[in-house]
Image (cartoon, rainbow, N blue to C red; front, side):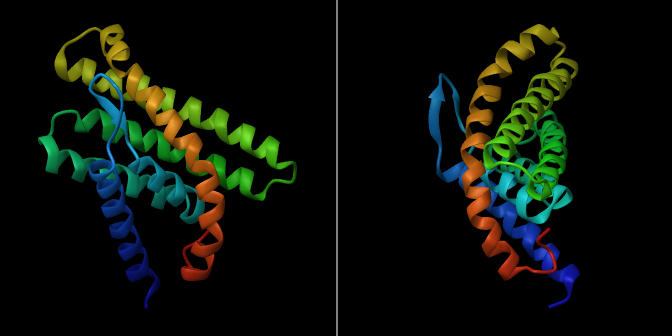
Length: 179
């Protein structure tokens, strides 16, 4: 199969998995918020297939999920936030995969990157976008998105061992695409 066709299929699968995990496995944690398990797919894609593929799968997954569930409500900020999260995680994972050092140091760097990327993506970008769209104070939007920030950080941190475990299989299945 041609590499471009493989990449398109891989992105379609990633987008579909993001939506399926987000919709079918809803684990409630806060009043009206649940763990978005689609972030596991985004993390695995960023880790195994690179920054661009992970960011596209995560962002398109959010867009499709929002269109299926509730139209455009919440989608612009969440999608823009996922772009930021995907870029930062993809670049960090690329660096830590190839750097020498202990597994603990690599994991610590990845966890710090997850917290920083999610804070920037959810608390700043998503909240800022929603502040503009809904004409609310930024502080109000940040307060409303703090639940999403905490839940998304938890899912992404828990995804790290899954990323490492699935990376070997990704390289076998898609040697041209796995980074």
